[in-house]
Length: 125
Image (cartoon, rainbow, N blue to C red; front, side, top):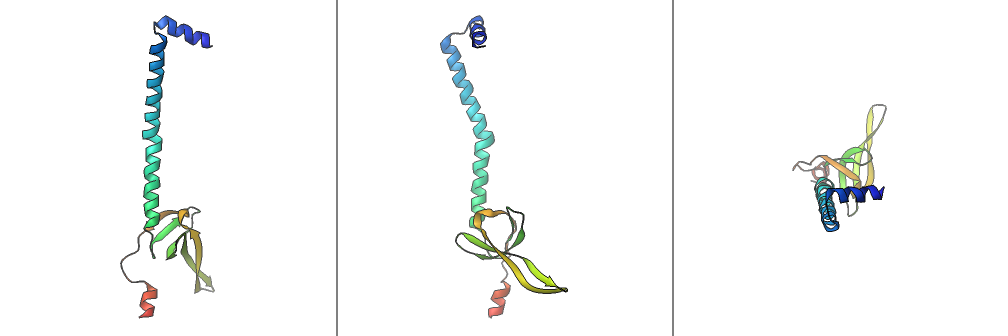
């Protein structure tokens, strides 16, 4: 098979250096295509996700990588306490269900918290 390729280059009238230059140009173009179509968009996406995670605050509605939807109750260093809902027994709402998740498992912020005071802040006054 390699003999066929060598014969094709010989028939085309290309020398070894011209073929090598052509191969190098092809590899550079291939890397440029991969960079602009795959690597660069992924880096941008990682940067925006990191910024989103950094700016999380109490009251934000979030979706975890596992698909859980809830509101941020408390933000800690590496973890976030997400309130998923409330336990209901006989049509009566009881205690809220809160789950501690790692920051990097937050996949999406669906709604940012408004600037209004939270319920806990109202209770303290």
